[in-house]
Length: 89
Image 1 (cartoon, rainbow, N blue to C red):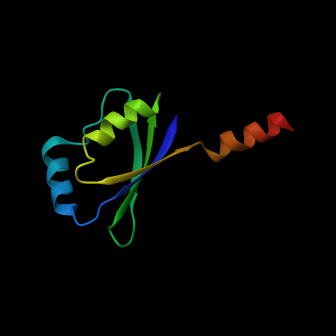
Image 2: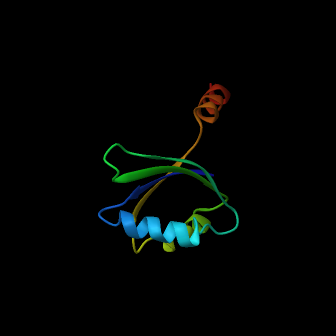
Image 3: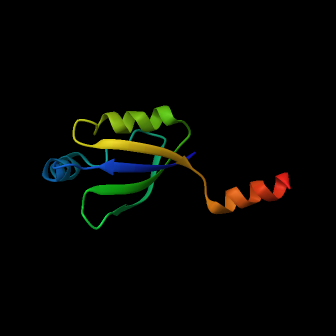
């Protein structure tokens, strides 16, 4: 499953940077990072993540939830969406 993860940084950017530099992304086995983008205000990070289950993703979120507020949206590619539409037509 693909997930759009929106991290809301608040004022913790230095603490977030320090943890990332010292401990890395802290992702559990089975969670795949595909890419990320930071908004123009440096307040949010948008990440595409992949995991077989939401529970595995929640393990990663738990490692950061003291510094970051998370919003998680299950997503699919536009190709998958349109292929499903074609099959049901």
